[in-house]
Image 1 (tube, each protein chain N blue to C red):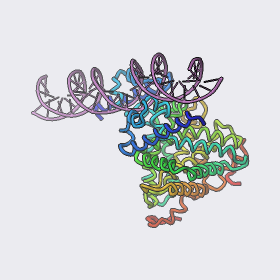
Image 2 (cartoon, rainbow over the protein chains, first blue to last red; image 1 turned 90 degrees about the vertical axis):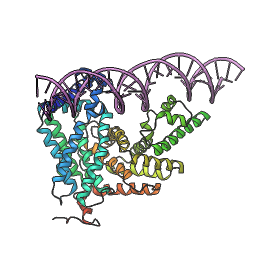
Image 3 (cartoon, rainbow over the protein chains, first blue to last red; image 1 turned 90 degrees about the horizontal axis):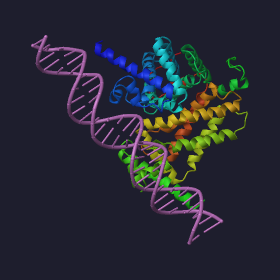
Length: 218
Length: 218
DNA sequence: GTAATCTATGTCAGTCGCTGAAAGATCTCA
DNA sequence: TGAGATCTTTCAGCGACTGACATAGATTAC
């Protein structure tokens, strides 16, 4: 990897870090691209050469996650139930998070805080999720041998799985969770949704709101 | 209802119709607010008094649906399983669609076509869905007597239900379906997702595709 | 080591979405 | 009809984003 490449990567991360800090300081909307660019000494035009939009600053996590899930799907055994494969994909994402460098972990946590008081941005991430969903659904449909363009079951598999990840990501309400906690929360949510896939799943623990962990069957 | 009110409503619909037609003719991105305003003889500034953004032109359906679901949730018996309530809400939306005027039906179908070749816009709708989801989840959590701020099961109930509606909305690939067909598709999808909520739901009908590329393993 | 080349960056001008403020037009109602 | 509320337009301006062109720097060929 040449010196040039490394410099680019460095700039990229510098922009990201500067942006996250500014967002946390003064809010997403009141931070301009000009400011971000200014604080890493590049021109606004250059900013857009690194990130296609201000919004895309907050989507790198999503995009990375999508890659991992796609790879995982391709590597799962063909006969496996699609939802199970999706669950493996999601767990792979969580695994990747646990292996991440301290710097990456910090970025992730900052991102979470930014998204936390800006529901619109979560929305954007979800928005990109809609496209992701089509791609992943095609992937899943291919595995099931169904028509990729018109297989609602595949779409639903993906949509439900992604919903679970998102809910897990959003839910921890503690203000300064550490990475491990967030990952655990997400893991629990995935487990939760796995357990839901049977009749009555949504009643089950409504009877006992005090204690979330309860016997799996009534 | 005064003359003023009626005139406003008329303008609103005129804008909507003009916009939908322009979007279909020349694409969403290459249609400017100036053009839309021009074709109904109002100033661009006035456009923004009727619709808070260009994007919001494409969200009226979503917003309307959210209202109906919220109302429905409030009117369901307290003991009912939350997912069942959500299903009632979604069916209410479909019912409302069937009762809509021919003009509204046409608008809906045009909207569908616009969204069809602009995944980003579906995304936007979904994006707003994220906020909707928080509201509805709070509603559901209240019904379950759980903490509205931190109840993942409620979030999941809503997220999964909305995913189903969205998938049903997106999936019909026929280019010129009529309203009845779309509604039926959505209905089927809802039914489908109801049936999924048990172990193995995602394997189940993988056994009977027309062309079983894979043998269901043991 | 110098020249040729490639690529990242900066500058500039311009489009589009969107907003606040102030002035003008229109409707409503006493 | 006149007073007051409400709707619309005009205008000036911000911020995101883009294309075109020029420049500075790194890379490669000689």
